Image (cartoon, rainbow, N blue to C red; front, side, top):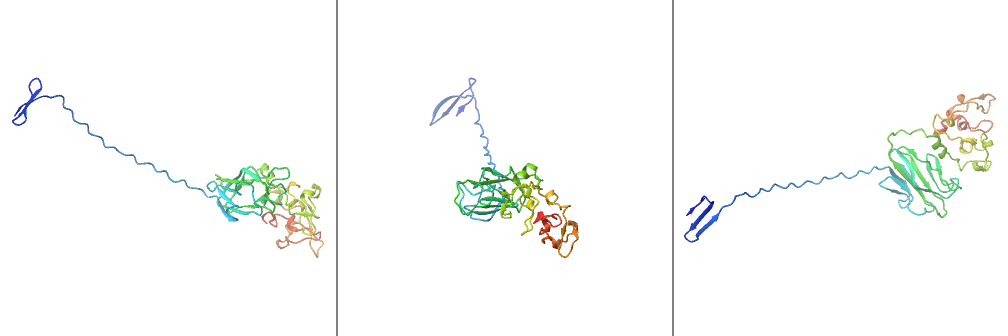
Length: 283
């Protein structure tokens, strides 16, 4: 039996077997309900997507490396080796720079060199290289690295690509064009290379090949502007040629396309003067 709630707040409980209990009841508080714990789901960042710029078309991967998440091409650390040959193909439009390393055996480009768009890049006899601050390449352009059979003590190259906002190839600035303008190291006039000629020879031609000096000794003759509409690629309006079997002087406008690779009576190759007519700059 029990008699709960005396005015004092005391409660008496009793039982036959348990005896008498005098209890004081305090404030009854309920146990707090635990709030459910929500585990925050981790945010999964998407894996970075590598933009591929290069494909190795020819060469040994150990000598022709594509590094830095597909951004750069290089011959690797240390000195480059003899007889290295690499051909890289640009998969997308890019802006190309020499990133910290560009050093070849000093020459006029006849030994170790990078070739891009028919232009040679190398270290000259003064120890300075002619690779520009940047070049714009379009998809399909090639970068070719070639070394000779001699042992090297030079670092080689490391060329890195970056994306260009405007995929159209910009017109090279005069400073850039001048820096990539080089003489053709294989051209000779009477067994003399461009480096042994003077500017007085720029309008002379090689009777054997019919080739005009200024078209090949471009740096010597300051004939460096490229592009279909450039001065270097226009027809020579003053040029007149004499074909075999005729004494009539003809201009480039009168030249037939099948005569472009022929010589006139003075042993001058037609296409060397009628450059727009004969698509000289596209050859």
